[in-house]
Length: 124
Image (cartoon, rainbow, N blue to C red; front, side, top):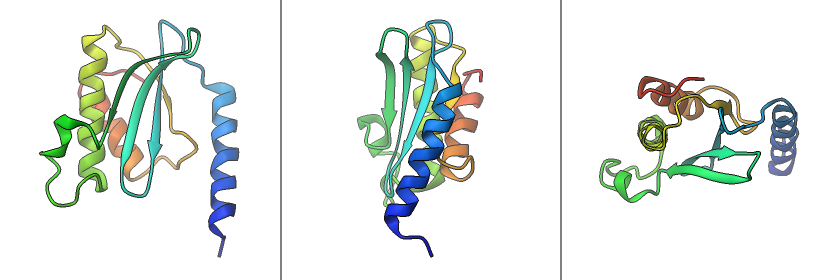
């Protein structure tokens, strides 16, 4: 069994490997996902300027009421965050993004967030 430190080092290596190829521009900013044990967050970042254009997370005021008793956990919260980030991006006239999974495997909460963002209108 891997120790917690080995798990973090493995994720950091995967994240660096992904970031070598994924770069957000003004036309296609980067949709970056961060997943903690209890919450999930997403940002849309323009790497050329170094600015965060849009951000959303399971701690957002809009989502706190809709999450129920399991605040911030699970696929339901990830889907709500994906929908919210897409709505905010479309309000800023951002339609096309590059998806950065942040070194996490593309399943579970990360996949739910991506699917919800696609369904709400983002293209990646």
